[in-house]
Figure 1 (cartoon, one colour):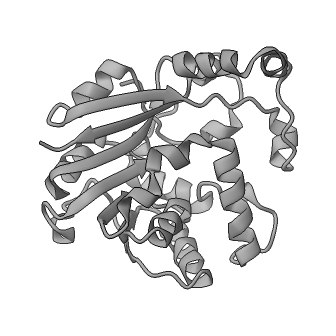
Figure 2 (tube, helix red, strand yellow):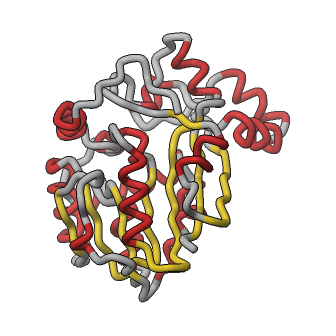
Amino acid sequence: MTENKQANKDIEVIKKYWNERPCNLNHSKLELGSKEYFDEVERKKHFVEPHIISFANFSNYSGKKVLEIGCGIGTATVNFIRNGADYTGIELSNESLKICKQRLAVYDLSGVLYNLNAEDNIDFLGVESFDLIYSFGVIHHSPNPEKIIANAYKLLKPGGTLKIMVYAENSWKKMLIDKDQEQYEAQNGCPLAYTYTHDEVKSLLKNFKNIHINQTHIFPYKIEPYKNNIYEKEEWFKAMSAHSDTMFKILEEKLGWHLCVTATKP
């Protein structure tokens, strides 16, 4: 795996970063904490990253025990709970977790939430007790992802499913980052962000079986209009889409920023 250029592995520095800018906080300009705000955050999240819905497969976990590592401000949280999951979420950033709790209250939903570092011993959550452990865009920001994976392995039931999204080394966005192009969506300035090849993902998950990796997601929009909720594609992506959406999908499969990984505990 490869580190970003400004990598800082101090967990307190990482926590401070996410406390100051909870992920997706600016997906809405409406009143923070209102139902309208959270509705808009979810709409924008799933519009820009539509693959999340099929990858998470929220409805498949009704009545199942689900642990989310890095629940953030709770977009996946509310979707798992709405679909009947027995949900537990852990989050490093106490500010993000505070907003997640607000979100549950707004929708009158209930789940178990903890302010924890997923690298620490979290056996108290229940060894071999979870049907699904889900973590989308989180572990690559942690100093020791292998510790998180080891914890996930312990907490999953035999036959349980791990679903993670990590950043792709061989990707359009990584090439732009390496050329010092500003990448708003990639959390420019983040203290730590590892990127992975397919083989490195398989090595990270060496104790799992049935490892499936789906590479996807190229962010096609101009940054400044996007910040104001205007979805105007970059000219080269606009031309590509006008010719064929299939061409863009092929590009995502080869150079997407997200490696969506599903694996099974033996």
